[in-house]
Each structure stands twice: as C-alpha cells, then as structure tokens.
Image (cartoon, rainbow, N blue to C red; front, side, top):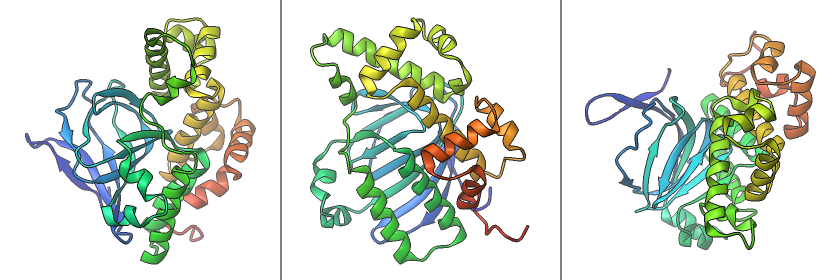
Length: 299
C-alpha cells in the first residue's frame, strides 16, 4: 500500500499500517489500517496526546478508563493524555480509522476549547454527513491540498462533532429514565452486541434473523435499541452499510453498482442510489468522484 509504513509490536509482528495525510497547524492528520485480529485484550496503555479517532470500517471492543464499549464505523472517539485505552477484536477482523492529534494550545484557542480540554475521554456518534466530509478530506489530502485549506477543514470537523455535545461512554443509557442499574447494564450489553453483529456484516440480515443472532425477540430488540441509542435499528443499519459502501467506493473496488447493492443488503441498485441520495445528497457515481484518491477524468 503506497505511502503506508508498518507499525510493529514488540515481537516484530506487523499490527497496523499508518499513512500521514497532512500536518494542519498544530495538528497531525493520518490514517491507520489495523491488522490485529486477536480477540484477547491488548495491554492497556496511557494515551500521550489529545487524539480524535474517526472510524471508517470494521469494529472492535475498547476499554476507555475502565468502561467497555463497542466501536463501530459510526463512532468518533476522543482521547486525552493519560486516558487508559485497551482494545480487542471479537469480530476476527481489523479496522480502519482516521486520527487527528491536536496540540493543547490549538484546543485552548478554540471558542469551544474548554469543552475539549475539561471532558474525560468520550465517544460520540459520527453523523453521516460529517463522516462524508471527513472521508472527502482524506481523499483530497491524498490528492494534494494546501496547509491553509487543510487546517480550516479540520477545524470545521472539530466544530461539527461538538455541535450537539459529546457523549461520555454509557451516557446513551441515561435516556431510559427510572430504569434500574441492572436493567440499564443489560440493555447496554444488548445494544453493543447488536452493533457488533451489524458492523461485522450483519446489515444483510433481516430483523428476525438479527434478533435470533442476539437471542431476543424482534420487538424487544427494536424497543431496547431505540431506548438506549435514540434511533431506530433501521436508521443505524443504514448508517453502517452506507459507511461500508463509502469504503468500497473510496477503495476503487466497485465494478458493478448492482453487485455493490446486493453485497450490502440493498433491494437493488435503485434502492442503493435512493438511500445514498437521502443520506448524503449524492449518487454512487458522484460519491465515487468525491472519494477518489487520484484525479478523475483521465479514464
């Protein structure tokens, strides 16, 4: 993979591949393709910088300061220095994400800087329209973009992520007001299990099949997921498979839109196109041009 360098473990094994995308003022912007497929937990390590992780594909379990959650392609994860992070890969596959390392001075100068600097590490949802901006910025960085524009667009991403406020790990469970702690914990585990299944390719399953996979009834599954996340299973499923389609389009893996639709559980090519237009305002062809890492037009 052009431009990637290997990241090795102490025993010499390649655990990930990393590629720098640019250096906005006071920041570092890079992408990582994690090759670790171990389900066991890695050794916990403290973070050494303010870092924002924007997920792109795959999924994994992470423990952040002792709290365990499943990270999927709709996740944004913000880490502070000294936060303790460890991960495992129960899906048996790697994952990919973009990362932005941010100097303390950069955060302090932002109008919303106090919210970044005083919060503990947090996980938030990455809205699909913000995710498209993030992926387009990755593509433009690989094509070549000047430092001024890169810095401005990265700051825009940071502002968009805080528009509705970050959520601490587990805060989504607080929507179920009056529920017993044991019930909230059980609902949180069920929700994370659903995220794990869908992120592992389970977006092609029907609702009954998905419910069977996580050992509950379709009605209970739908009700609990909505209660703990604030969105329907259908909305979440569409977000995850939209991310998978964007990853395929950005990687130049698409020869047939009909086949792409079938592989990701859409009824047909028209359904795929309609869903992408509804969520992102663009057709698959337009998105392929936006996400291309080389200039389109020479073909």
